[in-house]
Image (cartoon, rainbow, N blue to C red):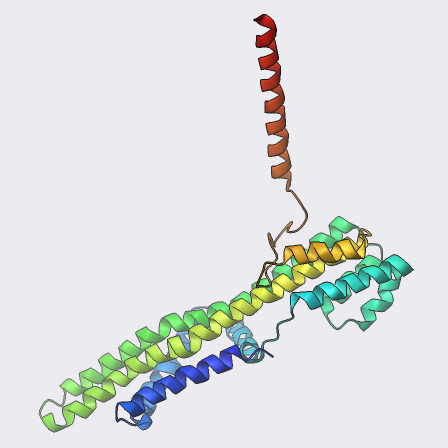
Length: 292
């Protein structure tokens, strides 16, 4: 469990409470039901209105993961793949069927079973890339929902303040009550800004980051499984996978479609064209020398 979100939110709200206390005020001064109901209720409502009910349910299901999100260090993934490569090298690819039953990760389990069944390498790559893309798309839906709430909340808070100030203008005949009423009116704006920057945006960013880490992990597993199928030497496979991991992070270098597979077709074509141009230039130079 990575408690970064929980720690960050606790520190942020702790700093807010400390400021209120040092200012000589009370926390109860901002805990007003009316503006809080408007800001939280209307923000979630317009967030649902901006998407679909399925988006909302997806976001709710993903919410616990923002607080207890698990991250797997790349070296563990690499060690697991290298172990599978050693097993395949010593006992054959059919032995991966038994190893698949011991694996908890459904993505890796499916890859190993397909390898044991003799699935073509290109077809297996397409299948695994589609699974990664589907996983990323579903997780991004939850992240976008909370990021959208972070955009709506401040405006909803301003709406609440305008409504409250309208009520203040209706009571100009009682100047003694204007101060508390104006202060109450701005609580809606406070909660709009507070909920956006202390709740919705951090949760959205957290889910986005967890998605990136999970996609990177699945990409390492995909490249490792395909290399195992191709019969790569375990030690060289481990070095290759470690070379795909950026320093101080989990993002594979050049991750994505075709990541870690060497030069692309475009790169090869460019090299071939450059080589041909060099040969032509050398031939022209030789011709000029002979003519001279």
